Length: 99
Image 1 (cartoon, rainbow, N blue to C red):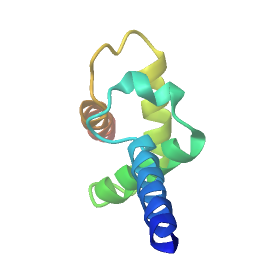
Image 2: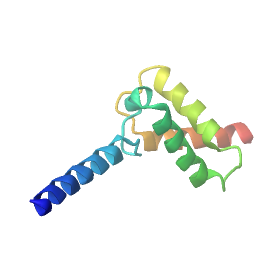
Image 3: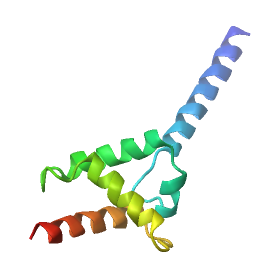
Image 4: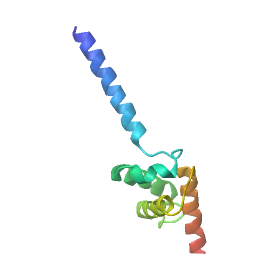
């Protein structure tokens, strides 16, 4: 009985962890998911991008990516553009503006 209960709780916890992980924004998500994401997910994603690209420029930080991705998601029709492509565009725009 106790083993069955522990098995149930463990399966439930694994399911929750999996769904929580799936809720995070990932590079292969489309840009259209950005406006529907929670603020915590947006900050988490932008922080990860800022850490990944800060070696190119210290201005490529969390705030820059939040601003750029908000503009990308809310201006025009992003269609099926992936967040990975949007991040590349954001970096490219920053590099051109810095020249």
